[in-house]
Length: 223
Image (cartoon, rainbow, N blue to C red; front, side, top):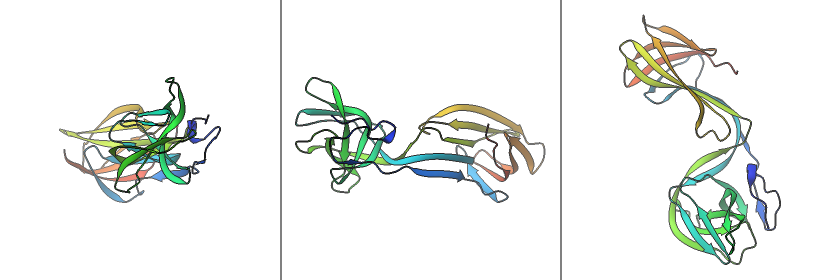
């Protein structure tokens, strides 16, 4: 029986499985001192430092059988890119393949054999007696973040009178959902008003309910 792809590592293998090394992602979306614009809901400033592996998210759910196994993958499940039996597959990071007794014992995997942006084959990381076909399911690219990283961002949320609304968000672990969020409000008393938050300094040149014109003077401070 194979081990789960927990934390993106195959703990124990009984089939040909290769997991690519994680990639580093570190930087900022802002260029210090350079004037920029952002729309409502867009990041004014985002900073990040984490490792990730390439993955995808299926738009629909998949349930299919392959020999003595049943694979169940809910829609929206992050699937990690791996090499399975010398082919490119995307697999769950947990056991989602169930044996005849209904016990999970392998990772469930999907493959786009035609390269048309839709999964059409299903298999698992256990001993395989053949690939099964499944109804085509579209998917989109994503990142599967490794533990220990961080991502922070300031989002522009429009203006009420002369009060600019900004949302601060912190991400951790999977970088998909904010672990912490705070709503910020700044009064613009004059043109080219400077605001600050956690070490970040910005000059707001102009703001409307559709976009903000600003310059980042310094980045955020790590807590």
